Image 1 (cartoon, rainbow, N blue to C red):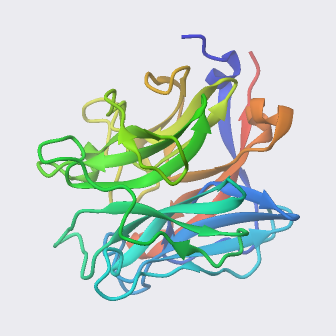
Image 2 (cartoon, one colour; image 1 turned 90 degrees about the horizontal axis):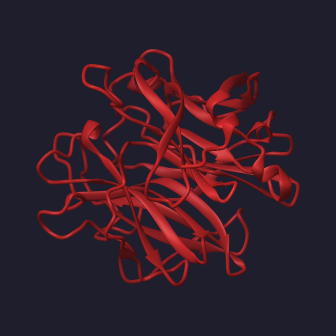
Length: 314
């Protein structure tokens, strides 16, 4: 595989900000720039429930003119109507411009979801004319659900990233199975479609890699993947009470074909969302930046902060 040399020298540098979400937040989305503002979406959990109890989760949006000073957040997508497939909560937004509209892919759970009584997760999209919304849900239920019984993703699918790449629409997603749906055992796969709206057919190469919370974007003709992974035995968990886990690992991977991913460098394991500029800068990782989840001490104290990608010397 022809891996761009600079990817082995990438590091993340903290970047001070004001106004980013600071109380029981998670799942930062990709970051878009529209009409002079940066847009970031994230999951807001009910304040008196620990992460994992997704009942009442909603998707919020926060904007900034400079990527450093952020405005007051606002509701972007609320749980569905009682009795609907996503009535319990909505989370893990990914927003993409396609066919003149803004599509928000998201995960949903049914009513009364919790770690003690987990339910299968599915995904769908909502559409708006601008990133400000309002986002209108696809009718008729989720757009993408768990795999067939016995498959690697038969318990739940979520964390979708949608992209148009190599002449087709793809969604990369995280899957878990009914035999071991612990977060340490999740894997990533993808599905293809002729349109952003689907229908999506699973690719037979899936799953392509183990991982959990992830970001994925085009780079120099291939794809970059930033994902947490329990890469070797006894190296620590990719997911536990304190996500800011110095014993766990996150890797930046590169792929030429979207199937085989090679690790390039290693970071602390933190769920991230990335801003990718347009034009020639999209092939320069040092022009990209992102946000990541950090924790103060517990499930209830997750917050989001900014980082920049930097490339070190030879």
